[in-house]
Image (spheres, rainbow, N blue to C red):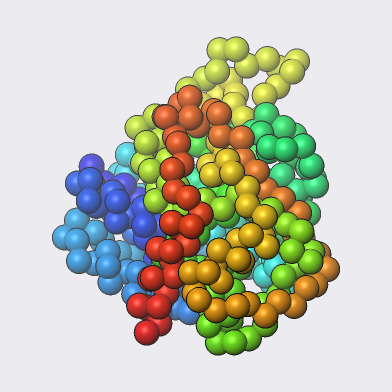
Length: 334
């Protein structure tokens, strides 16, 4: 069985592809290897995947409509896991068009390909950022998410809306996963834990926004991958109890579902930094700053739906996950 993983040279995409290959799947990995962050890191992730005979890499951009259609025609994928996207809340303030191209145009191109070459299940990356201005904790997929506070979040909310439309019109089973602050080895250099590690080791001050009064539902990469793998052969079906007069945003009369995928245990940012200091054996120099535009004070995932659906239960403690990251970081960067 061949699975398409877009964003295969990315952080989650590489780890997921590796797990699928180890489970015996054929994996076609698609990525455009852009320079949003160091392309060498993406190349090195790919080297890990290219050791597997059942892995095929395709360099392609999501905006290449004809190329995407040709790819689907060639392989007839039963399952698609769409992780490729322009990531980052802060970068969306500087380069909004990158988000429109990748997260909107690219997403529609993927959905059109699934329309013309039907798939059994289309799983795609959404984000905890869609909760935007919401303050009720924990964040639940039954909550309204109509107030994004960054363009990145708005594009992820748009992905969910587009997916529902294609599920309604063409009966494509779609599952959106709202990821909560994923961390671990081979991670993204633009993420706070990665930059903190680099700057602490270099003796440089780290920027701590909102004076450290932030909470994040840090979720270890292995737990994320386990959740995705469990969902692959569990495509959504019509919810017979869906009520048009009181609609549940997370499901539908169409084959459509949204899940939170997080640790369900938020960590105070200052405590996170203390754990990192302990593992590195170096005291951090902190530059306390006000809240960044587009950022939120806290994230906290209600994962009851995912637990009921596939038994998802994140098990990695923050100390253990950060230890794995620090060991990888020191080895990779020597």
